[in-house]
Length: 118
Length: 112
Image (tube, rainbow over all chains, first blue to last red; front, side):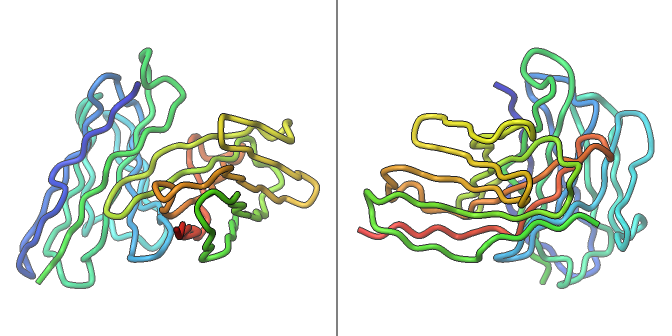
């Protein structure tokens, strides 16, 4: 079946640094990828939708300059948290949907990336 | 906007049935989903139901949909300790492509 890989699974960084999280579709071409943020014991909050080759569409209240999303290829989207601060500490999850036998019409989630900002 | 609500916590004994409930507000929902999230992990799709169905069964899982009341439930038969996790319902409306609106999540604890 469709597989989405996220890397890293856990990152700890100092305040003020930037962190990049990768989301890869392993066996299908992801035409659309979604980035979510999840606080402890809370639901998933959609941050942005990215379509390959175009700019991401951000949800209301999400700072596009803070959370840079790049979807340059059909198998890779990246989320960069710029100048991270402790309040950015969270669990970030991507999901992808696309074309191909595995990924067609199926929204597949990555395992998530935990960001801890000291 | 759309709103999806769930109970926060449910505790059952091993071997009993668990029923997790979900209510939603979007009357144009096309698909409704149940996801399972284990600690520190992503979401695993358990099952889904199309809005013109009222029941779907898949092994130990039974999904009931009352479209009139906008109520969705997930029944897990013979609940096992490995079923302990957080369960999210999600709905997909007619607008917004493949965007899902997730419920608040229900933590299921299975006790021996």
